[in-house]
Image (cartoon, rainbow, N blue to C red; front, side):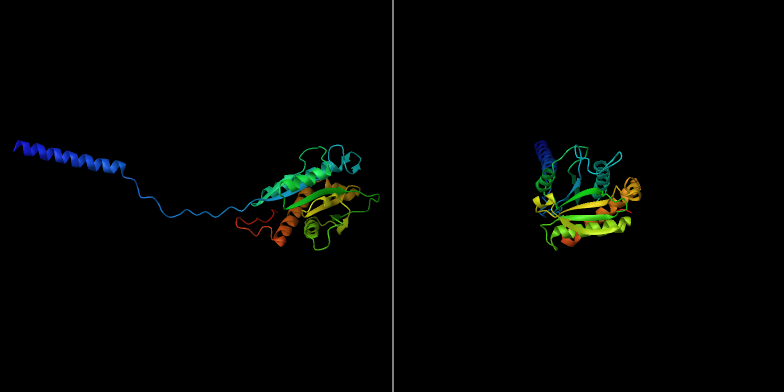
Length: 238
């Protein structure tokens, strides 16, 4: 009888140990359902070019240098572009340095930009001349994406600032050295006293920046550049 009890005890111990070991080493069944994630749409790169810089001051009126005003405006545009979910701004210069025009274009090509926009303030002998105008290279025919970009920026800039609309024009420009949609916007005249006061005002520069952003967004929408999976662009802030 004693042997039987010992045998039963041993069997119980073996069973209990087996159950414990099975609980420790048992692995959950793998999840056979594939994990699917929606691919993130790539960033749309916008190259912003503050005209002039370094040894090239651009227009000079007293102690006011065009290159400085250009950079201030472009920095404001950059902030607005950065706030857009899909857009990534790249500047050809962020400080007062000399950058060759062709190097600016080359940068835009190298980073795979969707567009290139150069931003300037204007000058003329007649101090009464004022307003905004946008330029494309004369090798681009009407209907070319560069014209679409220029018209979008010009229309939105004028609407945002109330500046006189001097339209979209063409002449020989260094922009011919890229196949990218490219334009150069002149946001106002430093040589016009009333307009100069506005161009130096931070609040008016913000209006200019919002207009330029709106023009960029309008162009990207019309050109279908943003028709990819991913987040949609937010409207420019007021």
